Length: 499
Image 1 (tube, one colour):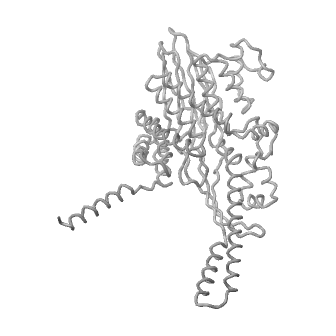
Image 2 (cartoon, rainbow, N blue to C red; image 1 turned 45 degrees about the vertical axis):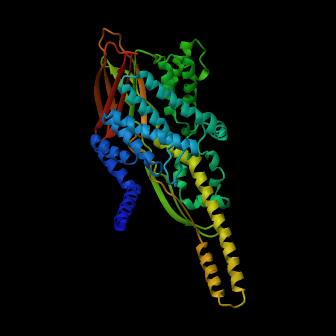
Image 3 (cartoon, rainbow, N blue to C red; image 1 turned 120 degrees about the vertical axis):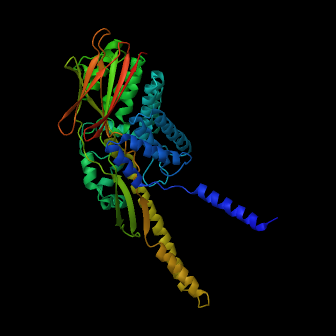
């Protein structure tokens, strides 16, 4: 046997294994390129770009793999590549099952593996539902909406800190109230208060905290409750829909659409209206013979990062790198639906994902980051004190051949523990989703009459973009989804069902 031949075979096998184990490192540059393609209007190019990355990551369970599957799912839907969108979303869903069964359910900055936010989980089901509408499978769409509701109520009933809800209800209507977990930090007292001061986030925090607080914080996410209510109304289950609307009214008690729809459902059930809804406008129950409009706009805010050093009394200095939402307030220009040249309905603001992410950061994420930074400082300080004690012991040793080695090692240990380092930076966020959503619904004209409608969308530049829609005489329900990309570019989807 030729031993050189054996060696070549082994070397080739090792090289093949090394190549198989080598993973392309997708970075913020790739996401920037994806955003450039998508928001410039090259939606199909963005879809191909995202799909290529999703394909490359399909067998991975770590790093940003989940994010790329989500990105590919949304841009392929917008590009009209529905089968590819569904395939990528299912890859994302499998990873979420894996993550949710093995550890905490929601991502926090600094983790090596992106595990998905609450909004990621909710929007995944909505986009999967849209793909089923394209296949004319209304029931499968409603299944995804029910799964979205299950996801929401698992959080509301099982995972959300009940102390946060009680605290928010107690302070509803008031401004300048710190989130439950921020109460002691904003005082600036104590070591953790000093870390908050050192973070230099006071301006961003004040902008957030000065808003008038509803009974529930936005981290409960109105998007899920409204879509859930819509799904129950489609199935004529008004009592369950009313439960969702009661949560919505706790989030936004003055929202015209919430008030109208909730009052309409209660009247249809024959129940007495609560005092807060007695002045609610009359409206139709959006059960059948209805068109539901969902308009998505904008770009979600990205992460910003900060690097600084803080010093606590009696403790080693700490080099701290962390991320925070680069939040910018954004209004909703609104939209209208015209039937026969007359306004039949106006869009109502539903959810702003950047506002929700900002709320989650101050309510849930940032206090934990402070805790971890403080604990790292304390632990390193203890290690530093132990290293100094070891150095003192080494210096007190009798002279010997090995004393210089022991002293050198002890000095190195003192130097290595002289400062703590904490890194919780982040760049990963589902960037091709709309930032905000607004909704409305309109009764379909009776069969035999014109079923034409006009969707008139106001833009941030003060213009109005109009889309002419015509619905089949056989249509019983329809969903219209408009994605405004920006710079006058839109993606319109219209799904009709005879169910």
